[in-house]
Length: 160
Image (spheres, rainbow, N blue to C red):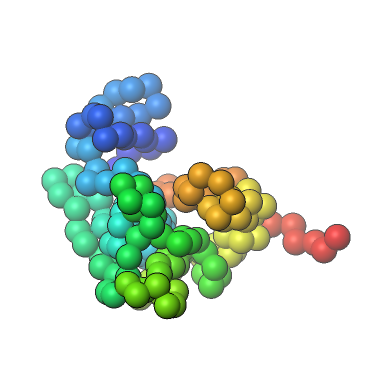
């Protein structure tokens, strides 16, 4: 959260790196998914059935799903993650342990950040759709959403 610009990490490196490859900090605890979960505009780490806040020395557990499981073995993905309820933070959907139901987890944190629902952004909406039709990855909006962001664009909503 303290670094400007894009950051990347992988299971084969012990550092988080910027777009030029320079080390920017320690490797996060997971490499699978991200989620805008708490009150700030920085994404949290979503892996298996838990969400962690990345920190400079360690991560802080924000959520552990109860009675649910992730999908796809080592990829450990949820059934769906995204802003489906419409306040810009993302919900996570996991199947129950007995596979008889889906459970939706929504953030309990209040926020003062005001952004139009992410589903109004065409790129984000497309990303939400690809989670269940292609390689399951978290959706991304067409604009920068993070610390120091300018006012988020207001979408032009129309019907065909």
